[in-house]
Image 1: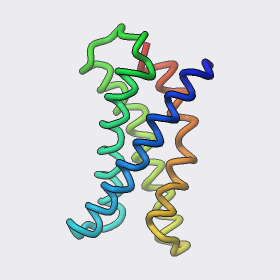
Image 2 (image 1 turned 135 degrees about the vertical axis):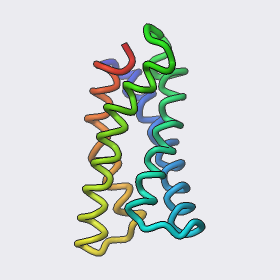
Image 3 (image 1 turned 45 degrees about the vertical axis):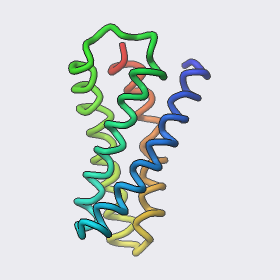
Length: 126
């Protein structure tokens, strides 16, 4: 694992957290969606943001597959883990423990991030 690449991954992820937090607010408060449905849309918004920056910066040296193929692999791996993980942890943290949805969202992101780096590095951006 390259420390430089891991730093880039986390920098993109930090920006993605901002995208996801804003999107969660937008879908919950502006659109009036239930927190779990809002989570799905917020996570996908962050995933698309992160994909573009990972492709252009984090893994710019690995342009082996087309954008569409790489995006499909990204969504089927990292996306699936992010959405499933966020829904799972949000349902526990918010639905069962009564935590604030925004704090719970940050915790869910943190829990899923290391797995996502490994998948992206070993399978998506090849």
